[in-house]
Amino acid sequence: MAKILVTGGTGYIGSHTVVELQKVGFDVVIVDNLSNSNIDVLVGIEKISGKAPAFENIDCVDYVSMDKMFEKHKDIDAIIHFAAFKAVGESVEKPLMYYRNNLVSLINMLQLMPIHKVKNLVFSSSCTVYGQPDELPVTENAPIKIAQSPYGNTKQIGEEIIRDTIHANSNYQSIILRYFNPIGAHSSAELGELPNGVPNNLLPFVTQTAIGLRKQLQVFGNDYNTPDGSCIRDYINVVDLAKAHVIAVQRMLNNKTKSNVETFNLGTGTGLSVLEIIETFENVNGVKIPFKIVPRREGDIEKVWANPTYANTELGWTAKETVEETLRSSWAWEQNLAKRAKAE
Ligand code: UD1
Image 1 (cartoon, protein in one colour):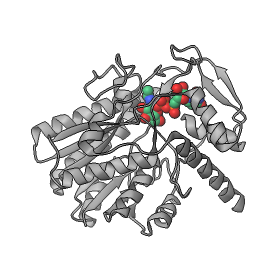
Image 2 (cartoon, rainbow, N blue to C red):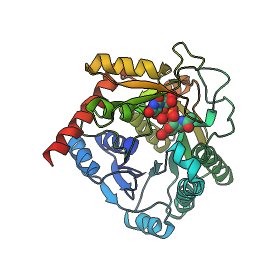
Image 3 (cartoon, rainbow, N blue to C red):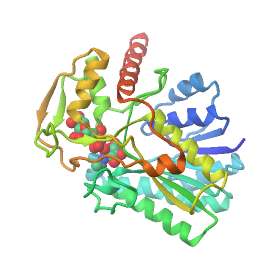
Image 4 (spheres, helix red, strand yellow):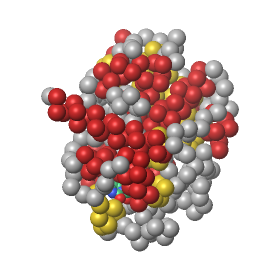
């Protein structure tokens, strides 16, 4: 069976993807320096999929160590490159840290691919490349807007680096996946989002408030031009998202791509407001989320949701999980974390 290198494979989306890859029989090598994840994630992966992936604690920015890794794990067929920093606010404060980490690691992959005869790359991009789209739902052909943050810029530049590299060397191919807002956890509650410190993203903040780790959720703004005044996003189940990566890898390995670089939106096609997420979370889980409305967060986009038709028709992929089930899985995961913390 084909061998897949998953950088950032102990991270949130990475770990769920490793499970789905192993489920269909792929051999997986994870490279992760654990800078924003925990080694225990490997236990969760093994529990669910019955198989421990190979693991290398390496920083993808370290070219020499990556080169040795490719020597050791011969015959890698495809790379899924998740490893990156992703906190928007932090990227504004430490831009060079973001440019260096997110772009040098990608350049290393692209330089090492021909040396080690790896042809296929899946790249984690983001709906952030669209900024505030002029038309909703947003398609892959929507114009790329000036990035609102160095983080967003690393995704735009990353996409360009891939396109330029493949333009110059048609032996490569890449599938660029633009994620909307991934949420939820594995249905077993053995894997989920594990943010270090105070969460930046909505869902981990919601679950940590529900369990009592945080006193109150802050809702950033209720004066947007949306039905209830709070921002709207397209929240996509993380396992659904993980499955799209398996399909992308199979598409490349089976020579089904239509061009050497393909780009897909991965979203549900439905937008939900922050207040709708809170209300649905409370209803399906029977818990209260104390929250208060605070001023807008700098850099937030008012509303964005995907037109996922291209992924639906070309990849044969559709987001299947309901938001209700997804929010249940988030809560089950947070409760499982609390149980584990108590037992320690
Ligand atoms: C951002 C990035 C996205 C990136 C993701 C990863 C942009 C435009 N989006 O998504 O590309 O992949 O982070 O981290 O750069 N909210 C609250 N209270 C909170 C937290 C969030 O009200 O405590 C609201 C936000 O205002 C927003 C929504 O919840 O409306 C979602 O926020 P968040 O989970 O941080 O994701 P994005 O900012 O959409």
